[in-house]
Length: 338
Image 1: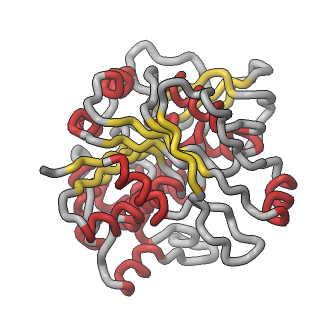
Image 2: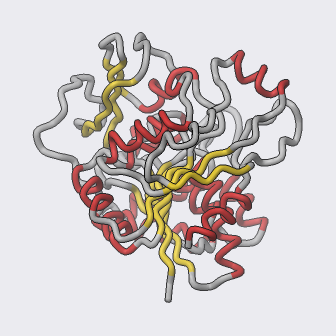
């Protein structure tokens, strides 16, 4: 029987999981892969395209299609290519332009628009936005400041201090960010396809990725919280290796779990965390950016949740490298959960 795996998130963490699972799928044919992607990305090329063309931000979805892709190196290289400099195409990955064009051709069928680009990358899996609505992410910080925009929260370029105490989504009115923080009376609908995917999933994997700007935005929907509570599959949270200055400063794995569960409205079944600290020089470089190693929970701190702790760090190519999860090791852990 087919085993259905759903990943939730965005950024660079979700594609790392998908790349490992794609290779696993090549070995065992009984896997079906679905990526449920945040729709709230509001930085860089994605934001420019969504403002100019009134489409969903394409960047995170393209990263997932590339991670699941099986086209030859020339095609993959082209889709990934990002022309430099100013001008019309400056800074836009070709894949972002392709997906924007596809969404314009199929304005009322985002899934079809994504599938069309998936034919070019020969992606072995389904990529779905969490909502088809144009939305912005909001966060309230401990000092009471309310901040609009995934990119602003992500970069920390705001007056909010302390921990994030609340998160919500708002629709874009016309095509501008709506700077009135009052949450709307009409709830934003989650994608029915994404909800169905959760309903049939054997394994649901949230993270790794920026907790507040990539992972939590996929669960800020009443229908998604209900789907997760009613799930028949296993819900897995993969915690980050390093914390992040403006978002998760000082967080241990226990904090990641508590915050995710607060917004998801349910308990996770499995926590996957890394138990191998990067070398001192790397930790020193991260600490200059206000980031630290995410410590493992003390034994027994996570109650009934199964904790899987193992080295999940991709080998660092050189000292300036970013600490990332090792796709292959992550896929091995996920395979054991099946």
